[in-house]
Image (cartoon, rainbow, N blue to C red; front, side, top):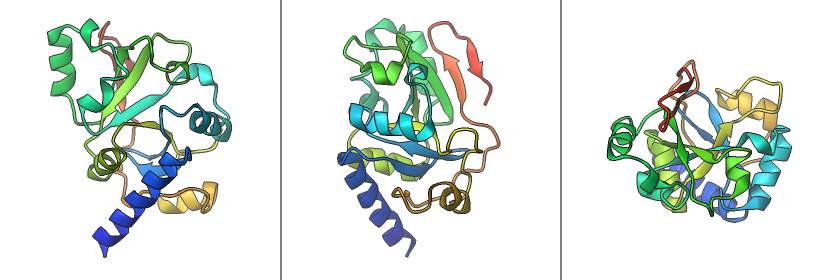
Length: 190
């Protein structure tokens, strides 16, 4: 039954992503809201839903590093920076990386960089695999409300508005750590 529910939810989520819609999915600490990072329409819906400034930029969450290469300026990373980043993935660490000129401004916001993470959550990995690219990752909550940690929280804040990827969060207390790979600065403690 678990596999049937899971694969059914993946199919529904991928269909919604392809329709420029928003989905909800489990991450390491909380449930996330996601959409197609290449769809300005989908990102505008997400920004409106969260009442969030487009200037903040977003995190991209992916199954593997190759899924991120069309967004980041990999050639600007030293081999030691890349090796360090890859040694920490998959996992709950987000890195700030330089971007390619064609990376959409709705992803970077006011920055010339982008936040990226390779997840170790098997359900999200399968979602990104089936979708064929990364998705946006931002906490599932309406502005000024707590992030959703359970299905009950999702129901309370969003009802049945969005498809939900079947699965649980890992229950981590803190959101993912964020580090700037260029400067080495710790932006957010995990």
